[in-house]
Length: 344
Ligand SMILES: NC(=O)c1ccc[n+]([C@@H]2O[C@H](COP(=O)([O-])OP(=O)(O)OC[C@H]3O[C@@H](n4cnc5c(N)ncnc54)[C@H](OP(=O)(O)O)[C@@H]3O)[C@@H](O)[C@H]2O)c1
Image (tube, rainbow, N blue to C red; front, side, top):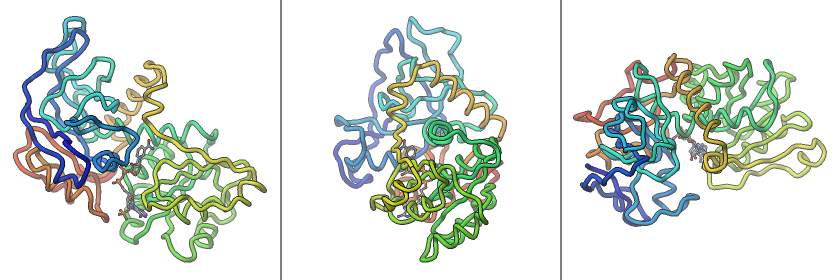
């Protein structure tokens, strides 16, 4: 089977190789999954650069999440799983950028046979993170407002979708006009552009309302401007720092309005939550993806052998959606004008 392996830290196209490895013997509680689709995420590239919370041993099988079909089952695994579609939970015990992958059965969640495998393949990281960010820090009621940065990201799209399902309103910050238009199309209630007058623009968009929660993936000054519009007792959750700058939030906002500040990393939840909770939440999100209520835009899919092109496109800013590996595809497929792109 073919597998993308990380052999050193560095530039992705220099340090990731497509290698053929022999199929390992299946352990009693393992399954062999034939991959259908697996996304490329910013965290994969942080890991490649040695900047992620996971320290890989080389050669390291790349790819954290995805979906596929069960091709073989170990002797202690229910044989009825054979042929079923399963989501692979991103535990970093297996690499999903591969034609086939051996997975401990505890790391899979059965998914719908009918749903779009591209959408299901992205459930493992971003939607579950969006779900936990919205549910763990403040008790949001219908009509409450939340604010977020990089709202056009896949994460931002899932936050908007899940917030809407709960009747919660979103104030969305983006850094370019084209992205603002896309966020409006995704269902964002208000959109403001990062710029010199960000605080005034946020206040104008909120029209007297206050935020209950701020979700930040950028760092720097935008999160500080959003924090000024939080209500007393509100929370800020930082889950990435894409600008490379520390979140610039005034201590006065914490002191006088009792704000709280949290950091979130999905892997801590996967490591510590009961397996039943993990299964239930993934199942719920899988059902929402299957009925079309939860999705994110996809820009392009690539076959595994075009990994260098996939990396290049994934690392570009101003993308219109995610880049994924699709297995069984013979050439790259541009989805910019397809119905797979965007929220359905
Ligand atoms: N902590 C966790 O457990 C966890 C879980 C899931 C995701 N994440 C993190 O969440 C982030 C988003 O992931 P994703 O998959 O949704 O990414 P994505 O779809 O690739 O989108 C990336 C977004 O970041 C924006 N961006 C990049 N650099 C920026 C900068 N310097 N200033 C402002 N915006 C910037 C991009 O804006 P443009 O479109 O304008 O380029 C785009 O909106 C990643 O950093 C990922 O690692 C963390």
